[in-house]
Amino acid sequence: MDVNKKNEVKIIKENFNTYDYSNALRKNKKVNKKKYVIYIDNGAPYFSGDAGLKGEKSYEGDIKKHYSELNNFFNKIENIFKTKVIVIPHPKYKSHSPKIKSLNPYFNKRKVDNSYNALAKLSPNCFFFINKHSTAISYPIIFNKPVIHIFSSNYNYQREEWQSLLYLAKIIGQKPIDIVNFKNNEIFKNLKIDKKKYEWFKYNFLTPKDKSILKTSNYEILNKLTNIY
Image 1 (spheres, rainbow, N blue to C red):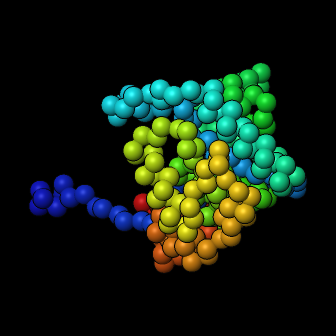
Image 2 (image 1 turned 30 degrees about the horizontal axis):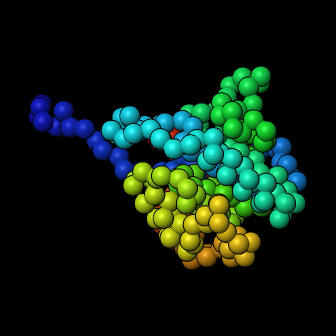
C-alpha cells in the first residue's frame, strides 16, 4: 500500500455567501408594514469593544454629550420623514432580558430591537439606514435600500474607525454627514442609490460573482455537502 496516498487529504473548494447575505435569504413570516429608519449601532463609545485588545485607548470624550447629539439627530430625522428610528444594537451588546430595553442607557427612550435576526427581519420594509462604520452595511445593499453614513465633528475618532467610515461611504458613492452641522438636502442627496456601486459591493464582498448561490443559504450548501461526502 502506498503510504503517501493513504495519508492524502482531499481538499474541497465550495462557494459560500457571507453570514449576513445568507441570513437575509431567510423568509420572515411577520413583516411590519409601517415604514421606519434603522440605525445600525456598533457599540462605541459607550462600549469600548476591542479597544483594549488592539492597544487603543477607550473613548476619553464626553459620552453623554455624544449620545445627546446622536439622539437629537435621530429626532430631526423622525421629524423630517414622519417616522421612527429603530436602534439595532451590535450582536455583542443585545439585551437578552425582556426587562432591559437596551444595555446602552442612552437609547432607553428609543425603540430598540434586540432580537437576534432584527436586521434580516426589519430590512425589507425599512425606509433607509443610518450607519457609522459597521460592516452590517451589507443589509441595505442586499435589500437595495438607501444608507447614510454619519459622523460627529465633536467626536475624537480612532484612525481605524475614521478610515473605515470614509471607505464604506466612498465605495457606495457617498459623503458622510456631520450630525451636528448638516442641511436637510444632504440627507435627501444621500438617499439616492448608485446601483452600479451596490452591485459591485454585493458581488465582491457578499456573494460570488458567478451568481451560482445567489438564492442559496449557507445551511443548504452545508446540507448538500454532508449528503455527498
